[in-house]
Length: 94
Image (cartoon, rainbow, N blue to C red):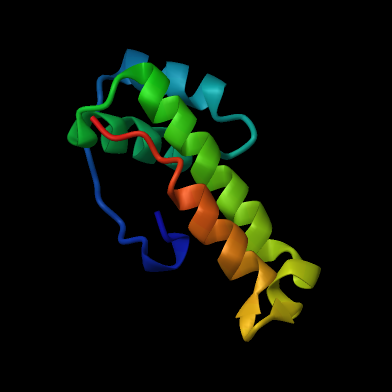
């Protein structure tokens, strides 16, 4: 999921769920937690597939932020683009 294209969306939750969410989100990752859960449900993936694919997306984020990988190129392709392309082939489908 590209974080530069996030759009705010409001949902109503029971107060007990809000309390639990706030406890889990002490490091300010409540939105990411909710996005991941919604994405897992919409894609219909199992917990394993969803977690695995989430890890691939996290790896891609790290590569995108790595200055060396994004600036060094071989045969007119950056190392980051090459690695990201390879990682995307590992994504598990339903």
